[in-house]
Image (cartoon, rainbow, N blue to C red):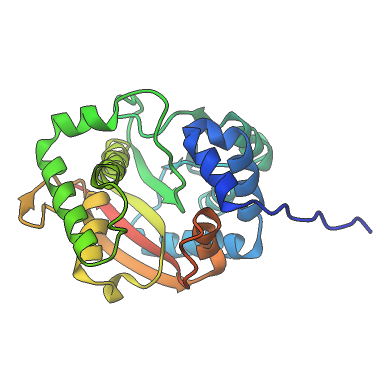
Length: 284
């Protein structure tokens, strides 16, 4: 009987160094870490539950699905089983992870894998029926439109981001010792991701967001809900500032899960309980 491969322990500091390399970090240590994590029982259960829940909640069967930041294809494999006739597209910035995804889906003829630094607001792809972003590990990109350029062109969103960050800091939800501009920049980056997801989704189509969380959506406080709604483009105003809305929320669910350990792996400052939240959004 073959010996079970021992999991390699990776320190938070090593993962942090990988993140500093931006998207190229997933070609090395971050990629190895993620493949090992995504193969464990907690992640497999998360992918299975997320796809089953999504299939129940959709009002129609999607003909085309895009897995945004698909990694090594773990979720794509589940999506193929649930939607056998759909065209599947996977975006990721790491060539090595895409190679693993190709092998995992056995050269599926209905699958297209694209290496792309995310987000790409100039993406020429035609919209699909369903976009999915599952347990995101997106890092600031190496090329393309910068956060500063985006903020300069979307001043209302920049003002709203500052309001959200200031409130999160005042209420102790975010570290007051971290630079404000760094926090605002991260929030604008998340907003850019939401805008790209909307660009990739048909009007009336759906976007599924699966995110780490410590509690269900209805249990979190108003400030944290503002952060989620703004960062995911699901509000028309936040903290008194009007912003464009990309999506409306139609359903959500929460499940406790050991996948929250992904967060504590990456930061020595987090050691709490939690799980993941699924939100079904409709493109407006």
